[in-house]
Image (tube, rainbow, N blue to C red; front, top):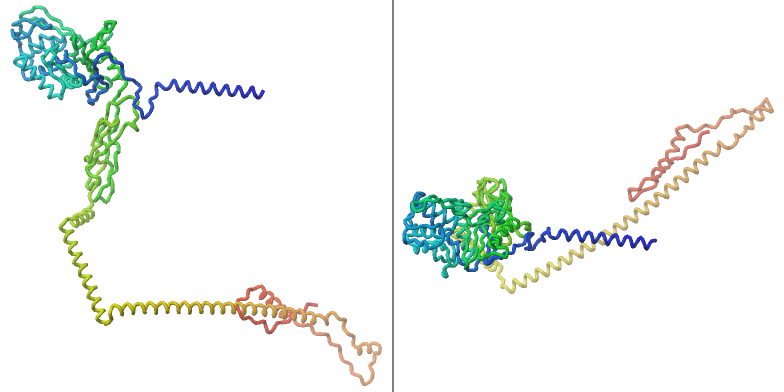
Length: 596
């Protein structure tokens, strides 16, 4: 029976352990290990040649794949063309007529413009941005730059101004040209500049644009946006909510390319994809990659406040203040950063303080900046804030005066003067010592050897005197000890004599008491004369008769006085003897006689 119970308990423990292990394994996918770089959301798999996710607010790359590899500009070139056109539009105004000329290259696809056709500048610009029209780009380039070649030069200059180091444009349309190249990192800088133009973002986010009738075309032409990320049609399957612009295009050499911006939970992310092709299901690979990158940026990153305003950062000492010797420095503003979801705030976040002075000097004004704090995430700067004084501190007049004196004494000239004075005083003292030594030598009239011999003799005399004093005190201590022993012995003997005297006095008192008690116990003797008188009533002739006298009783005072010596003797026996030379009582009183 016991073996069966043990087997049951063992089986229950095994089952409980297996259940606990299964529970832990279920929690593993939802827990991020501290101190590692693994996140809850892994990076997506991108089928296109190059891809980039760039946060426009914090200038942070969230995902990159071949972002520095050279690519053909393709339709990204029209972003730079639109950027220059919007800058030129600010100087010309909105009511500018453009006439198509024979110089314009109308062989490229687009709106189907013809020579001598008149259109508004804004109409051509919107048609190029929405429908990626190449003929509109050629006409706008000739209008803005004078010639297409000059406009291309301005495109390259603007790219260099924006910090694009590996970008070269050969035409304003982005059609294939072997000499034109760029990188997604450079395209991100161009798209960031385009995002700052509100008109461009609104126009590039339109699904369609209508071109009114012109002098050469009576029909209303409709231009549709090929960026299907903006189209909410469910049958297309590319729609991304809150996506905006920026561009979408295709060339056989570069493949599909897309640039789009999305604002999710306050994070504005730019997605760039290049070199995408259709898959077996005839789906646009660049748009599919853009969708997955937008989803990854939304789930894997969030804007987090890493430092709150008025957070106490450091306590700094303060001089010249009699109210308080320190002041607290607080953060002047909130510091937010776009960080991975589930990061470790303790190990990943680092705060670096930079103070103007390690020790501040009163007066301190509340809200004044005395340094800055920088926040780093895994060694990367993500934000900074000023360090402000939390309170005001007044300056103490007395401390300020003492400080002025100290600063005056720290001056090099003052220090030099003090050093010179110290040297003069030291030289004067040395001279006085020398003069005193010479004077003493003259007075004594002894040579150095004689003085040394004299000092040696004095030391010997002092040593002998010390030895003599020690011997004297040793003899005195011995004598005191002998006298103390004699006094103790005398005291002991006196005490013994005193005790013997007390015992002898008590013995004598008891003996006298017994002696005084004997007559009372005997029978009273009869007077022979009385007896004879009784027998012979008549006395003989010639005999005289005397009356019998009774024995006299001792007075009561005598009995009381007889008891007192015994009592006083008993008391003296109980008291400690204080005098070293005591004497026994000479006149011991008799004990009292008992009453009859």
